[in-house]
Image (tube, rainbow, N blue to C red; front, top):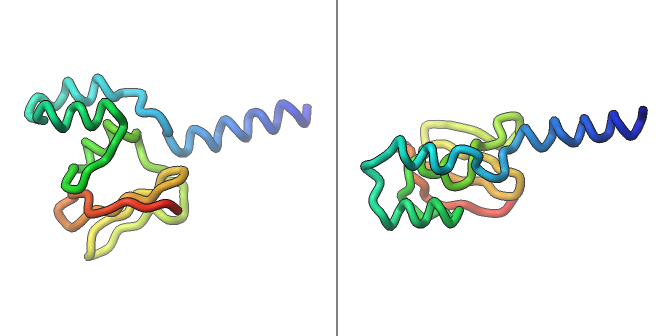
Length: 100
């Protein structure tokens, strides 16, 4: 029983931060306006400065909304992932990302 509880707990923690984007191709098809170079970056799972929030979600998946470091303010927004934090400006464009 203890082992089952640990497995269920681990599953919940993993769901809190989506590591691999499960909807990458679907999101790309929803945005025909994204240029070919950006699509290749997203497919490779990378980020570049200036990406918008949908592009980040397509590349890295949803941020960890249950994490304590995901914040927003008048300076912009920060999305926390399992090992990284992505920072956006007021217009929702990536300015930088760094390890936690």
